[in-house]
Length: 69
Image (cartoon, rainbow, N blue to C red; front, side):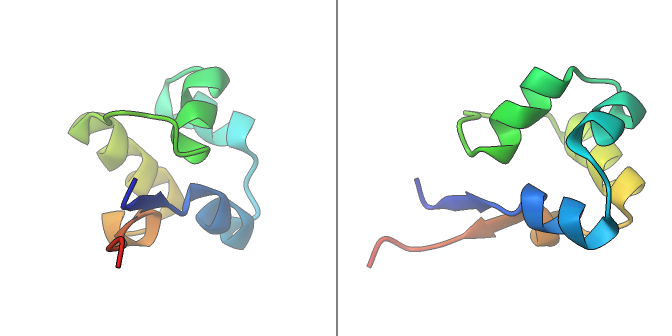
């Protein structure tokens, strides 16, 4: 998949645990883990907004597009 998820990088930079972010955002740790691992097929804008708000980042810091070339 050409969409790269950098959530683990941003979490490490912010020194925040996945479980803490999940609690603040209001989703389950397993669902957030699916996103972090790149196995998610979609993400709601409201969830992305909440993640960015809690991590004080832009969506482009979490999501990246990489061509298959």
